[in-house]
Length: 92
Length: 205
Image (cartoon, rainbow over all chains, first blue to last red; front, side, top):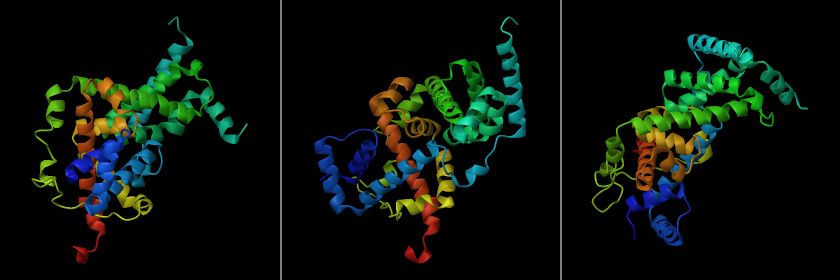
């Protein structure tokens, strides 16, 4: 029987690659008798789902109030205008 | 043509609208991955400048926002690649050395069993419905060691495979999975202590 540490490593690895049959068997038998690792495994799924939503630009709690500062906005606007002029007049 | 597509066409011909319409969203997208407002602003600027330059090559198939986010993703990967390649290589070795087990040692006993058993967080969907969960996740992401956070971002936000991460950052497969494992374990520890710990009744302890 593998330890919780080994099991948690395999659970993490399963998020990155397909486990071998032997690895899957080891994790499954461990999870049958270990509530802590079952919880860990469910938590990893919550993390994966949460990061996927953030990556899609979805909900992020209070962070929807996070905005570009006016200073950054005007700096970026300036840089775009400068490049825009060059774009229109490549001889410049 | 749908209303959205019309809007997009309009937006494409007016790059000055990009900043107004999508600036905040691009900024948030960069910030959640990089945790550095100044750097996130730079990424938005680089993205919009690159978009301006590549405007003629835009196929018009994707919505403008999707197109811009795509450019931003590349900019972020580029930035992380440079940052990690230039950062001290011994950091990578130290943080992914399996013998030192940095940050992991204290979680397991000598036989590799949890010292403190991970808790049941309940229904995943209801976790994700809580504003406090997202706030805590944000804080916990910031608390990760920079290198762990960067690799975690490449994996989970940019969607790179482990092989791609190894190649981009010139690290070994072991470096990569150990760093990802530690980032995930660190995040769950932090979430459990902060968000989940707070939401449980005291009587439950």
